[in-house]
Length: 259
Image (cartoon, rainbow, N blue to C red):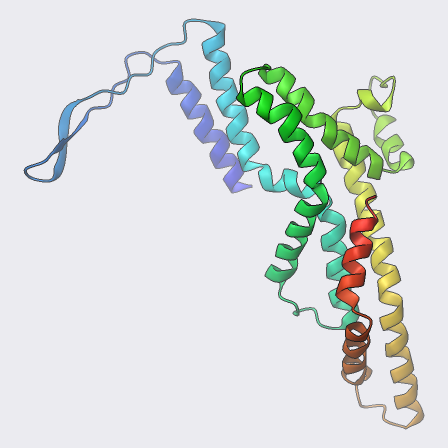
């Protein structure tokens, strides 16, 4: 939050300076003494003379804002949510909340997200970014084309009942799903992904829970009430997970769940 506020204030300062006249900064380099001293290097920021100049400053503000929010956009608009939730529940189910390390899980989830979202990113690059870079389309057209593949992906994964919750709160109802804005689609998509991630995690949790219950019943029947069942069941859960090649099965299931 502090980072976002800092970027916001920094951008406002740039826009303010952009609207001032005759702002000069003088620097030069003294090669003999190898120190900086006042010289003839001038940096001037002139007052905007047309609406297009002011729109450039606004675009700079938007670009800096998007860069600062890029991690949140990556998390909320891609398949990262479902993947990281399932992996987190899996660690708890096995009984190893510290293994694999959090950095490994997050890194693996990021690469799986990039792999899964590659067709969407490729579509955005081909139909939006490359034409805009070649100056074939305007900024507004670029934004419109860039959000279409992302909206299509999120709408495919979003439940109708979750989408209806946010549509019902809109002052003006859209004519169709294609007319929905990202501000409506993203929260509905996040809600659906949270629900789906917990559903998959629940199914994964059941076999490990059964092992814990069986081990606990055996220990009780043997009168070993003071021995923690989790300590005995942990090796069996790890062995089961390795024998069935659990990481491969879960990874494949997660990727196929988006198609």
